[in-house]
Length: 454
Image 1 (tube, rainbow, N blue to C red):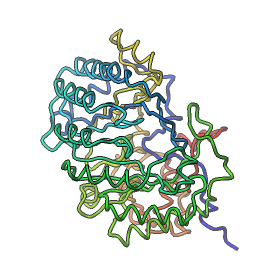
Image 2 (cartoon, one colour):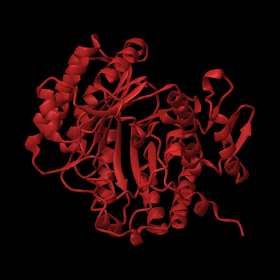
Image 3 (cartoon, rainbow, N blue to C red):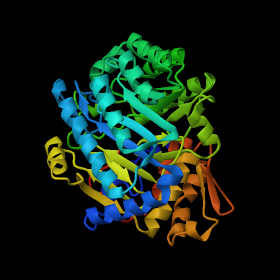
Image 4 (cartoon, rainbow, N blue to C red):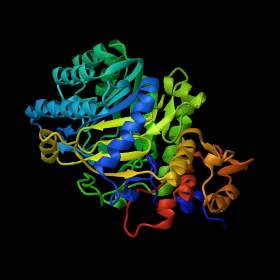
């Protein structure tokens, strides 16, 4: 009897928001000097042509969601808002002074944490401060993550006045038992109000995040959540697999046991019913975990093969430079990555001394750059090729041999110096990327690093 594909391929693996993945960064040979050199090289080559992306991490939350693996600080002390905004603007000022010319911002995303922890006045101070130091591209994409319980019409209208047109709400699941387990209580009425108000404020793309594989979650729970979501008809839906990584320091994943989680087979059923219901409602699968209506910009980007993936997720356009501001934020110059310190006090201290608050990073070598592009192709377009010499790397023949078993299982097909992921293989895209990940292949982790791929 053959082994079910779910059992066979349910192994730990990265989500590939970057390559190399953070645990495999060469932090020993990284230096702030090297980071700044690669950043300036990329910036001067691309700023006037395509602009930059700006990710701003707003880490404060009033309560702990126990499914979350992000860097956050739990507090109800809103006096923390103003000093943090001041620090963010100081960090951007240091970059602006170093780069030597005004950045042209093509994308801004406010992530968290909970961006709507901040008042609309302080968010307005932040964005107006950014644009005193930078220019806004004509078609600048501006988005933020909103909590349905505390996103107000004032939040939406204030950010819309600066050009924000996209908001994404964390929904996760509508079942009360699941909500209690993950400490995320929000009635459907709150999500409906927040969605309606976004449209009232002129937002052209409203997204909902849904998670399957949560503690105590059943197939019926997922079905009910998807059906309720379709009633509100958001433009984009992120349908994520819950990543159970309780070993990560500072993680809030507690209050339930692994036995309370659905099995791999149950998770796959949850995904399949969700995908089916979304397809029936007119949503199109866009990359891993993401769905969009044919009227949304992300759909058009995917159709035209302009879609890009980075630490902000899937985007409708690509910039070579992405600056991350705030604690734990990651920046990307294409040739290198750099991550900020995670402690608030250390972050403030470094900025007060006019030092960029970076504590680790990675400079990509030639092999890294080639593999990064292949993985990006697979994650964004479900295909890649090596028809040109600059796409070839020495160990590619060995990688292709490792993919033969996935081909035999119908997950991909080989074409002339190319491969394409089949419809059957799309849920296994992380597994298809794994053989390309030479840093992981050369040094298999001895401890748990990644969530399961299924």
